[in-house]
Amino acid sequence: MAVLVIAGLVVSFAMAADIPQFNTDKSWDYLIAQCGFGPRNPGSQGHSLCQDYLEYELRKYTDRVYLQPFTHYDRRLKTTFYMNNIIADFGEGDGAKIILCAHWDTRPRSDMDPDPANYHKPILGASDGASGVAVLLEMARLFSLAPPPVPVQIILFDGEDYGRVGENWDYLLGSKHFAKTADPADYRYAVLLDLIGDQDLEIKREYNSYKYCRDLQDKVWRIAEEVGSHQFSERLTHPIIDDHLSLIEIGIPAIDIIDIEFEYWHTQGDTPEHCRRESLEAVGKVIVKLIYSEEP
Ligand SMILES: [Zn+2]
Image 1: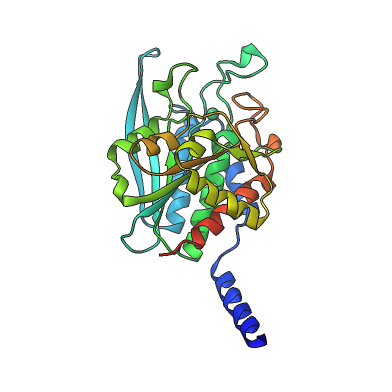
Image 2: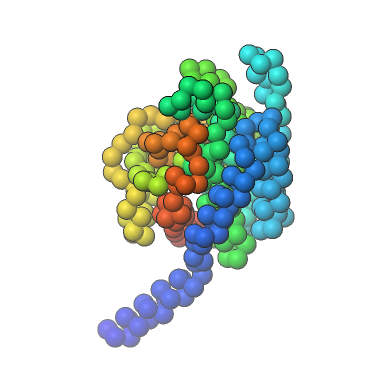
């Protein structure tokens, strides 16, 4: 019996050694760095500078980084905007990939701000944009240290938050473009991170994910319990329109990890002061365990 126990310990130590640890400070630095470019709405200088930064950072960790360009014509402004999804591949083999994704653009208007004078100002997007990307850049760094057991594709979508309320055709631009080009057979499933920087993080079960991809949601919530991420809650949200829907529509199972009840959502207050590094850690730990416990 003692031998079995010792053998078990040896095995678990060996597995633990293969799984790198999520570095919360590095992830937080990625959030701050993105905010350092200012608002990153399409057409802005911050957008252009941040795109170069994200591509540069990802290239540190893999040489398989691709830009997926597309354009969007805003019929109100009569202007064409140039956007790019940023895609990076990790892991070996030609098996179906797991997508880890987030949007990297930020909203061009603060239409939930308590002060109407701020309505036309772009948001900084510390939680709404930078937080999900910050966790994924840290995942990219980990993948360069310890290759994932299955192929993983990190996708940073552009143009998620461009739309005006009630005009859904101007939302989810990058993920819709990606979905037009993707073959669902190439993918196992997708996990989307959005608005996860909230200082009072509570990640309820997003309703569309619950309705369409319950098994995957159950799996992720089970892991959250195992790693002690108590910010994941069993309560349900309303159905949220987000990039995961573009993937579900073409047959890729996808869930959204999101805290939509961020007090500063779509306001000038979406800044690092209203985010917490522990929130990034709570999600990062779950994603690490999810990926590294996959079977090849
Ligand atoms: Zn948003």
